[in-house]
Image (cartoon, rainbow, N blue to C red; front, top):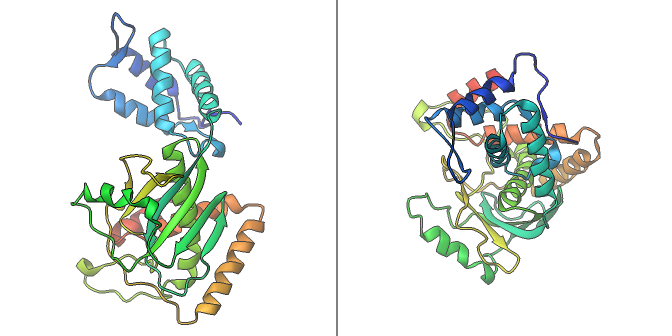
Amino acid sequence: MRVNWKKRSHLNPDIILSKIDSIKIIDNDKKVSYSGLEYLDAITALMSMIDFPRHCDGLNHENIVSRAVGRIAREGTLNKNNVISKINEIVLSELAKKEHKFHLLTSISIDLPYPLKVYLMEDTKIRIMSNSYPKKYLGRNELINQHPNIIETPENYARVIVSVKEKSLKGAGTKALRSLDILRAIWCLFGNSATEISGDSWKWKPINKIRLGSIHTLHRDNGSVASEFFWYEPNFLPAILFKHQEPDRFSKLCKLALEKLASIPYNNIMKDALLRYVRALDEKDQIQLLLDCGER
């Protein structure tokens, strides 16, 4: 499946591309730059008009679009046909790259006994550790210590390692967090409270009982840190460890739900819905949550 412009009558990529064309500057070395601040807004607008198929999920879409626009701008006039053609050319090049094995290290607010210790989901392997991470991942602590302003994850959170094969760092991190959040959504469906007691607005908390730790780091197969960049939760709020009153029943329900999810023909739609559910209920700003739900 190719990358295409979204088929909506009110969208006209050529208007945006014409604007970019008008602000481009090409120097003697054929390098392209842009005058003013309109370029960032233009790229954001273009991103909303492009339909990337699912096999492109692990790619950096904004980077691909920017590269395509830059190459066409250097060669001639921008229009929707040559830009989408260049985007597909870059996508094919990115997809042809060799896959590497990565491990995302994070944590979750769940207590023993775990429903299962190992999960296989969407070509990822999720392991919940009973103790600390293996010693080869010591670089994680060194990286985290360089950022003292980020709220620390409580020590009693369960350590998690999500193993993936991907072509890029961003793709690996995105894929690992997606799989873990789908699993967490199933847990929260059976673990969240059926009702919530409202208190003072300044005491509002996230609804999800099982939440991620504050920092997620990516590592190569030998344990070394794959990048100085990492993912973190900007609105992190420590959670009380979740422990179901009937752990055996909880484990059976979650296992059954995962089996059903894997067997239905429209499971991609269900997974996207589960992701929206679990990520929305991670937020403590419930007024914004209601507004977001109203927009959908």
